[in-house]
Length: 189
Ligand code: ADP
Image (cartoon, rainbow, N blue to C red; front, side):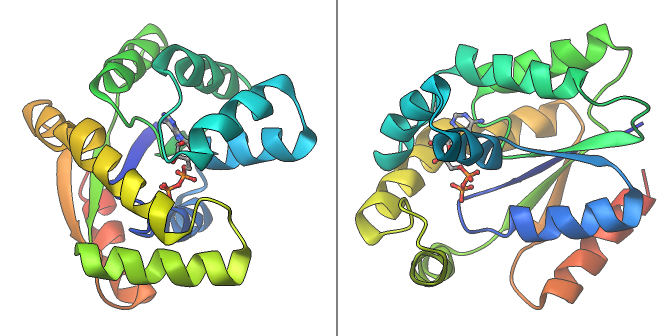
C-alpha cells in the first residue's frame, strides 16, 4: 500500500502533482478541498457550512473533516493506496490519519512537502482566481490562508520529520521537473 501525503501551502501545486501521481502509481486520490467544493456546488448542508469557513480563509473544524475523510477512505475498495491532498492540515488531523490507517493495518508511506516561496504562491493563486473564478483565490483571502498555513499547518513539517516520513520537494520549476523529483522519492520507498 502506497499512502502518500502531499503537503504544501495553498498554491504549492498539490492538485497538479496529485494527478500525475495517480496516473503513474494508480492510487486513489482524496482532495478535501475538492470534496468540499463539490458539496458547496450540490448545495448540501455540509456545503453551506464549508462555504462559511472557506470564504473566510479558515479551516473547517477537525472533527468534521476527519469524518469526511474516514467516509471517503471506506469508499475505496481493492485500493493500491491513497494520495491525501489537503489533509492533514493540523496536528490533530495527522494524529487522526495515523490512527485511521493503523486500524486498517497501514501507515503513511511518505509525506512530500512541496516547498514554494511565498511571492510565487501569491502570483500563482491570483492567476488561478482569475482563470477559474475560485472564490477564495482573491488577494485578501489568500493572505488569510497563508497566515493559517503558517500557524496551523506548517507545524506538520516537524511532526512528519519526527515520524520519519518527511521528504522535501523543490516546488519551483517545471511541472515535469517537480514530478521527476517526486517519482524518485516514491520509487525509493
Ligand atoms: P488550497 O490548498 O489551495 O488552500 P484546498 O482546495 O486544499 O486549497 O482547500 C480549500 C479550503 O478548504 C481551505 O482553505 C479550507 O477552508 C478547506 N479545507 C480543505 N482541506 C481542509 C482540511 N484538511 N481541514 C480543514 N479545512 C480544510
